[in-house]
Length: 509
Image (tube, rainbow, N blue to C red):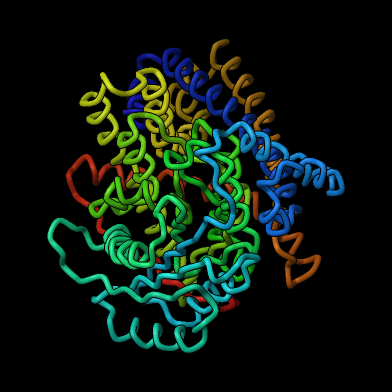
C-alpha cells in the first residue's frame, strides 16, 4: 500500500500525496541525522574499548583497591573499567562472582564449510587473551554433511588438541521432528549435549557463558575477557545477553563493490544499534549464560533467523526483564563472496532476504504480548514492538519512497508540477536531501578510519570513497527488494528455508 497508493492517488489528490511524502521524508531525515550521530559516537566508543587490555584486569577486578590500580592506566581504560567496577561494588555479596568462577563455551556450527574457513575461526579462539583451560569449543556439525564434517573435525582435533579446556564435536541428526533445518536446531542440539558434559564435570551452569559464532567468524583477542568482565559486573546477568560488534571486514577488499557497500552498511548499522540500548537485539555472534539457555530450551528450532528471534524468546521468558548489553568489541565476519561475481551478488541477495524474514517476529511479538499482557510491562513492550515494526517497514519502503519522492507527484500530475504547491514541494525535498548528506559524509569518514588497510594503496582508498555514489542503487537492490520479497512471501504463506551462505575466500579480479 505504501508503494502503490501514492502513485494511484497522485492523479486525483496530489497535495495529499505530497504531504505524505514530506512527512515520510522528514521521518527518514531525522533517522539519517540520528544515524550519523550514533555512528560517530559508536566508532569512538569502539576505539576506546579496543584500547583496553581487558585480560590484564581480570584477576584483580574483584579487589577493593581496583580503583587505585586503575589510576596508573590510560584515561580511556579508566573510564570504561571504573563504570563496570562501580556496578560490581554495589552488588550484594551473594551475587558476586570472580573471574575464577567463569568458563566460556564457544559454539561453532558448520554446514558445508571447508576446513580452511574453520581453521581461521579456531585459531582466533586459540589466540584469545584468556585462560584457555576455561574455554570449551564446540564444533556443531550436521549429519547431512557428515563426510566433510568428520574430515574437518579430525584435522581440527589434531591441530588444536590440548589448546582448549576441551574440544567437543557434536553431530546434529537430520530430520528431527519439530525442526526446520538450520542453525537453530543445530546449536540447540549441541547445547543440550554439551550441557550434560559441563554438569558431569561439576561446573555450575550459571558460571558458563555461551557464545555462538559462525564458521567464518574471527573473534577479537580481547573479546572473551571483555565479555567475562561485563558478565560478572552485571547483577542481572541471567536475564541479559551480550552482543558483539559484527564487522564484515575479513575479506572486504576482495568482494564486488556492491557487496562491499552492503558489508559496510551492515557493520555501521550494528555500531549504531549498539549505541541505542533500547533498540539492540541479538545478531549473529552473541553470548548468553548457560543457565538461562537451559531454562529457555536453548534456541528456536523453527526460525531461520534464530539470532534476532532469541531476543524475543528471552524477553517473554523473563516477562519483559531482558536486555542486550552491547560490548563494542568486534567479532570479524566475512562479506558475502562466492566463486563468481554474479554468484556473489545472488548470494548477497539471498542472505539479505533471509535476514528480512525476521519480519516474522512481528506476529510472534503481537501474539505473545496479548497472551502475557498482564505479566509484562505494557509500555516498554509496545515501544519495542513499534521499533520492530517500524524497522521492517522502513527497510522495505524507505529506499523506494525516497528515490521516487520527487517524480511521483510532479511527473505524474503536470498541473501540480506547475502549481505553487508543486514548486514548494520540490524546494523542500531538495533541502531535506542536502541535509541528509551529513549522514553520507560521516559514513565515508568512519569507513576511512575503520576499514583494514587497502592493498591497492591510494587508488584503493579513492575507490572506497567513490563507491558511496552507488549507495542509492545498492539500498534498493540489496535493501528494499529483498525485504519486499521476504514480506510478500510471508503474506502469501510461502515459507523461506534456511539458506546457508557459502563461504569462499579468494581475490576477485
